[in-house]
Length: 159
Image (cartoon, rainbow, N blue to C red; front, side, top):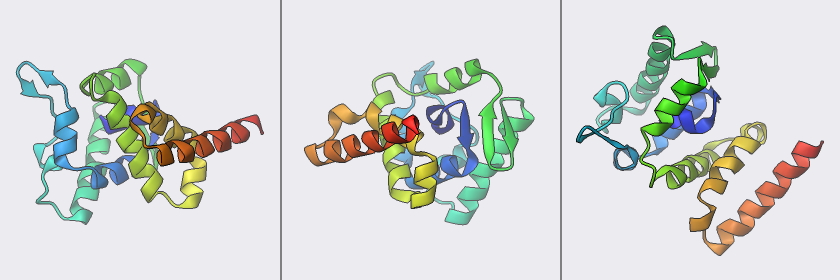
């Protein structure tokens, strides 16, 4: 689900960072109801708070590798990409339509708070795009900061 919000190409570390910083309640509440039960991704242990930080990182990275083995994505060291846009679409569809914008905004907020300045600069377009999804729910201060980030992204795009 998280990777589908990051785009057709995504960094493994970005998925791990978001998963380490989002609560299982947020994940489950964002999932679409399928056949009367919450849709799940991979092992249910991945949404368990019983795992230590290092074991969750290994579990998330391992899950991405499993997706590669199943032909869902291609992994080249840190860079990943969905093998087909329909795979990304199907993963995105697991997110409840009512929750999509806020979920993407939450991912953008997590990345904004956790990425180093260099990583943020490299991922500026993606982070700004995610934050823009939830702009309607932003406070005035957050909107001012988002406008600054959009300006920075616009300048970077024109270079």
